[in-house]
Amino acid sequence: MRRLLALHRPFTVALALALIAVGLRPAAGLLRDRDDPRDRAVLDEVATTEVTGDVSTALATVFTYAAGDIAATERAAARELSGSALRQYRQIFGQVKRQAPAQRVTLTTRAVRAGVISLTGDTARLLVFLDQTATRAGEAAGTPAAAQLTVTARHDDGHWTITDLRSA
Image (cartoon, rainbow, N blue to C red; front, side, top):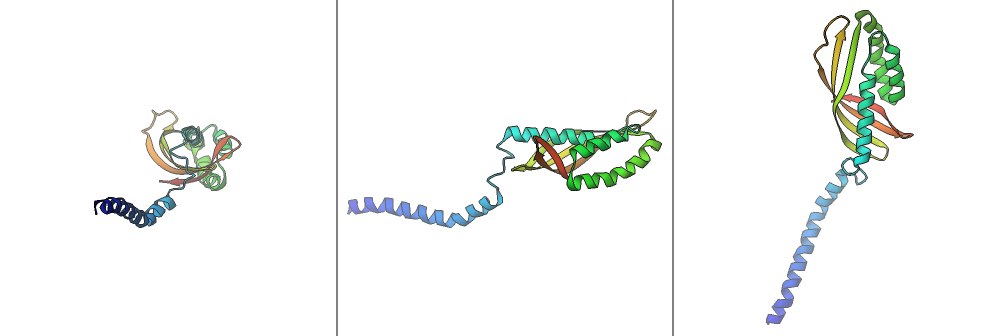
């Protein structure tokens, strides 16, 4: 009888584990469906550092302008932006182009913090926090204003190009 009970106990434990595994399988599938196994945002430190650096530099460049040299900012935008990001930028920057020289305004932008939300293949999504300071000619520097953007970027020819910008 003891021997029968000794054989019965491992079988009961194995059966219980199998039932638990079957019961948890749907929940495991939900987790797997939400997390893309190809997302390297947390796992690939080199790629996240590269995309964060390229995007931060690009945003600082395309959102910084001097009233006397708007063309330099437009050239930077053509180099760093594409797709809907470039279309949005050109639409907004058209107003700046008309008003900045008369107002003698200089805008300085710097990326304060950037984090990669997702990095799959050659596409990345980031959340970027910016500080922007506007200064009129002859006046002291203005107070920095904060901005948040959700950015989508694409890796082409060894460089990350911004393809979409959204205020966060």
